[in-house]
Length: 89
Image (tube, rainbow, N blue to C red; front, side):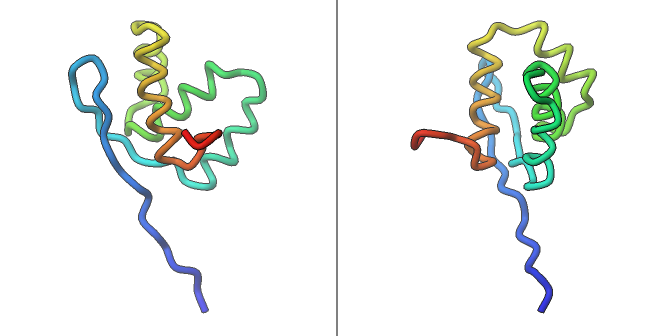
């Protein structure tokens, strides 16, 4: 019996007064985060690019233009949608 393919969850989050469409990371993408080790900058760029449907260059540019709280809002929403939230968040 083949395994069922379940579509990735999608949603949106308000960032800077605009709604940003996001999708959850796939299991493969989540596992790929481990390759970044302590390089959180690259891990965040990877997450933003995959979940927001943008290039890694666009994700990197956005990260350098916003403050930590704004980036955290978007990255936190991606994490929750992807099942990465810890502590019941």
